[in-house]
Image 1: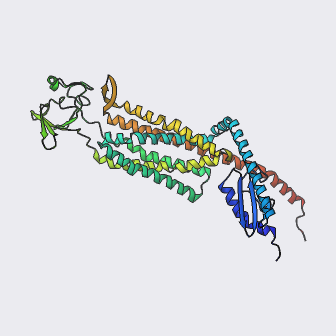
Image 2: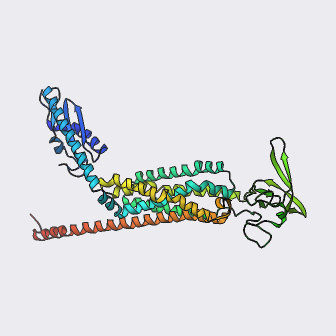
Image 3: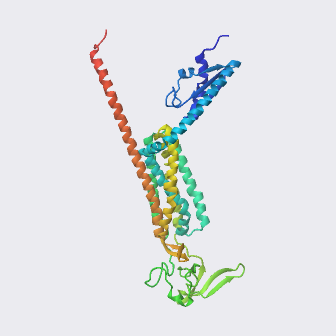
Length: 452
C-alpha cells in the first residue's frame, strides 16, 4: 500500500481545529484529533505566528504543526513530551497575562470609559434599568392607589402581564437582529425606533388614572379650611389624632374613622363578629337625617380606565425591551476583542451603582412628596395614609417618561457617531483609491491604442 499524501490527511482535521478555536477564543487551545491513524497536536495562541485574529488559520499553517504517527511507542512518548511542553507553556502564559492584566487595569478601565459608543450605550441601559427598578418597586402600590386594587391583585397583574411582555420584547428584538443581520448603525437605529414607539405609547399613561377621593377633613371640607383638621360635627367625640379606621359614608364621602364621622351606633354580625355598618352618624346627613357608613374606603370611580392602562403599559414595556439585545450587540461589537469581558463587567457594575441602587430611592422620594396625610409615630412620619392621586400619577409616570427620553437621546447620539465613523471610513477608502486610479489611467495613456 502506498503512503497517503500529507495534505490530504491534514485536510481531515481542519474542522476539528476550527471548532476548537472558535469555541475557546483568546486562550491556549489544545486539540487532539485521532482519525485514520493520525494523531495531531494543535496549539493556538492570541499572539502567535498565526496572527491576532483567532480562527484565521490556513492549511499551510496547519501543516507546520507537529505530527506523531499513532501505533508506535516512540511516537506516543513524543506526543506526551509535546503535551507536557504545551502545558507548561500554557501555565506560564496565563501567569503573564494575569500579571499584565493587574498592571494595566487602570488603563483598560479608562480606555473603555473613553469609548463614546460604549459609554453612551451603557448610559442608555442605566436609564432603562432605573425605569425598571421603579416599576418593580412601586408599580403595585401605584395600581392600588390609582384603581383601588388589592395588593395581591396588583402584584398578580404585574407578574402576569408586564414581566411576560418584557420577555417577549427581548426575544423579538433578538429575532429581528438575527433575521436581518444588522450592522452597528442598524442596531442603533432599531434601538431608536423601539424607544420612540415606547414614548408615544407611554405618553397617554400620564392621563389615565383616578382623581383623589373625597376624604372629610383631608381633601374635602364644606368650610374654607384646607388640609387635615377636625370636623365641627365630631368635636364632642374627642377623637384621637392617631385613629385610622376608614369608613365610607352613605353620601360617598370617606372618613378616616367612625369617630370622625360622629357615628354612635355599631352594628355587628354575630356570626363572624364583623362590623356591618355604623349608624347615627352626625357628620353624614341625608335629607336632614343622620346617615350611615360602611367599613372600608370608598375607592375610586374610574375602574373603566384600568384595562386601557394595563394594555398600554404592557405594550410600552414590549417596545422598550426590543432595544435590549441590540444594545448589548453594540457593546460587544464596538469594543476591542481583548476588552470585551472586562467591558461587560464594567457595564453591569455601572448598572447596579447608577440604576438599581439609586433608582428606587429616587422613585420613593418623588412619591413621598405627593402624600397629603401621614401616619406619625413618635412625632415622625411612618406611613402615608392618603396620596394626591393626580400628583402621584404625574410624578411616577413622568419619572419613567424622563428615563425613557434619556435612553432615547443616548441611542440617537450613538447613531450619529456611528454614521460619522462610516462616512470617515468611506472617505478614507476613496482617498486611498484615487492614486491607484490615476496610476492606472496614466498606464492606459502610455499604452498603444490598439494592438493587431
